[in-house]
Amino acid sequence: GWDKATHYGVERVTATSLAGHRFSKGWANNQKVFFAAEFSQPVTVEPMDSGRWLITASDVSQPLLVKVGLSAVSVDNAEANRKAELPGWDFRNQVALADKAWNEALGRVTIKTSNLTQRRIFYTALYHTMTAPSVFSDVNGYYRGADGEVHHGSFTNYTTLSLWDTYRAAHPLMTLIHTDRLPDMAETFIHIYREQGKLPVWHLMGCETNCMVGNPAIPVLADMVLKGHVADREGAYEAMRQSALADERGLNLLKQYGYLPCDKEESRETVAKGMEYALADWCVAKVARLLGKKADARYFAQRALAYRKYFDPQTTFMRGVDSKGLFRVPFNPFSADHRMDDYTEGNAWQYTWLVPHDVHGLVKLFGGERAFTTKLDSLFVVTGDLGANASPDITGLIGQYAHGNEPSHHVLYLYHYVGQPWKGARLLRQTMTELYRDDPDGLCGNEDVGQMSAWYILSAMGIYQVEPAGGRYIIGSPLFDEATLKLPHGKRFSIRTLNNSAENIYVQGAKLNGRRYTKSYLLYDDIMRGGVLELQMGSQPSNWGTRPADRP
Image 1 (cartoon, rainbow, N blue to C red):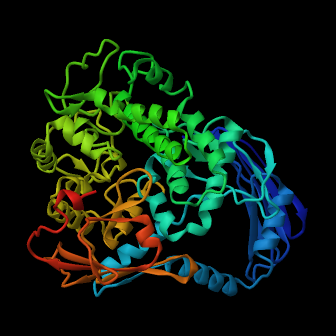
Image 2: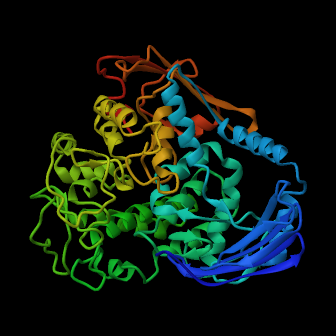
């Protein structure tokens, strides 16, 4: 299992309080939790098996209330957290305060719709996006760092960073509705780099798990820099640059060959790794350009084109390539051997599109828009045997489009880049209405720390950031009559639809702040200035957003 306890202990402090710790390893190998519990009356404590204790109230005729503080630093800090966060014993008041806090958080997006099912799905999804990243510092500013040591910071430190998932939509959503948290998020990333020598890959309880592939913190940090939410831009750039220049997890081979050969020591998942590194390198190049680092910008922009090395023009799929430049054989684009082949939780059908940073470059590889569109159309209808060892993460299938796993999440918006947004609209509505439900099993795949839900939030509002960093939000097919973002400084941005319905899914025309708007995307700054995007909807495809000048 992921969570094998290695050491735990409980001690009585007073007749009404206990303290203790639990150190464990597994997925994260150095998890340390200290607790301090206070009870509303004296209790007895009896040890049981498997590190459990039976706690009994001395007066069983009265309710037994308990308050628990947690810390990754010490029992004393756990007690200080408890006293600061739970000073009284009024349980109903705490419930009311929690309700108020959640209503404020969920109220950062308001929607107008008569469809109560979609309202429930929307706000459940919005709640899911706010359960992580989690605060990982104490009220006195101390936290346990990525080096295992205790540090003091003037910022709020975070953990539970499932970045391979969340860089795609959850973090771009945060840049719209949680701008107040972004400076601390950036400081967290920079400090993790300083403590462990690289940006986080997948952080749990402050520990690096190295789970999943690529450099997924780079798009998140770059996005915050490019959108103006990072004070220490030089520190952020150093963290990105050094993480991209490391010699681990296949990066040494990338520097040597210009791609990841499938026959070298890092021989698994090389296509997935290489394509994730390419999009991260594009992000480094953008920040380098912003900061005037021209040589770095050229170097990383060139590395960002490494995705081309995996493209086979004969089969028009991304494939494993060996150190001699030959494609791996045999090849079956449907086959998926869970984390043991050239892909990560996917197959060639799904990974061929993972070029969100250079969609037009990918179109050229196919030989033009017609060939690209034909292949993209076929993605949603082809079926084939994934094999006995296929990843359980390949779920939510429409043809070979796998909405239940994150590498596919930008794909429905690729039609906008070739001037056919109506094709995306049809598939967006199908995905939102068929693959999200208001039931306990209402998601078609692993939530992955809010990413599945963040895709829904943005898409249901009618926008989605495809490029990994920098803030162009593609305009899709909104579900609601109106969705309003609560922005900093009292501003609002609303997306209103006219004549919207289950049949009227296609944008016919748009106005931004009362003026005709022909582009099929919005800039981040357009949104953050506040205002109204008005979309006229209809039941037939239109030529809105189709001209080359209006495409992303």
